Image 1 (cartoon, rainbow, N blue to C red):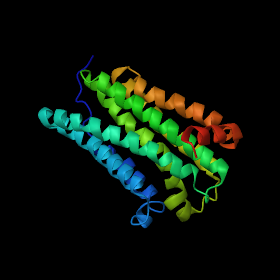
Image 2: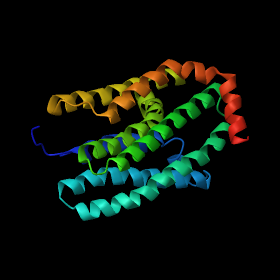
Image 3: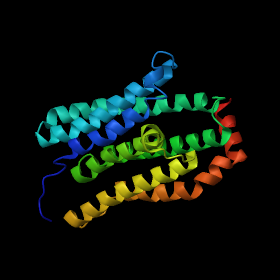
Image 4: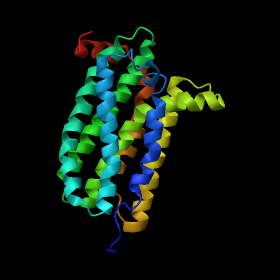
Amino acid sequence: MKTTKLFPKTHLWLVIPFIIIITSFYPSYWTKFFSVPFRFHVHGLTATCWYILVIIQPYLYQRNNLRLHRRLGLAGLFLAGGVIFSALQLLPFILSNPNIPPNIVNGIIYLDIVALGGFVISVYLGIRNVKNTRVHGRWMIATVFWSLLPALVRFLNFPVGEIIDLNMSFTGLVYVTNTLVFLAAGVIMLDDYRKEKVVYKSFSFIAIVMVIVTLTYSYVAESSFWGNLLREMIKI
């Protein structure tokens, strides 16, 4: 296989979804920064630090600063744990929010659980393949896609929806989000195959999950069984 420079501009490309994620939470978090529960700040801080770490790591790799890369990688284990734990702490708050219709609550929790599960799997497999740079790096990048899943729905609602007047239901926003994430993963898979004749599992996994979520979302969102199960599990 031809030797290529790995992840040469990854840190630059990752800035784009970072801006999307930060912007998407403007109405629900940044405008209410001093009034939201502390658990939101914990999740926001750990998730932001994780994302910044994912941006920095390929840059350090490009600069051959592997010692700092490894040290930050160890710190990233604690950050990932913080992201997961704090995300779980938000679920009861979302479920108990009287201002959100039950079907939308069910859908939001479904997306959050899918995103969190994908994040956990990606972090685990990234750690497991730490000695295989190509595989390790792609699993770490995959964590960005799972962060995009809940964020992009919000981003399409605001600011995109405000700018071009989408006038789309929440379910419609979910379908558009799933399609965009699927296409983004597909573009990366095609590029990998063009360069290396390999399709990496990290992105094919994302694409498959997006198809499954798209096919099941409406049913889950409208399912009283799902809503009751969530409330029983989280004891609301």
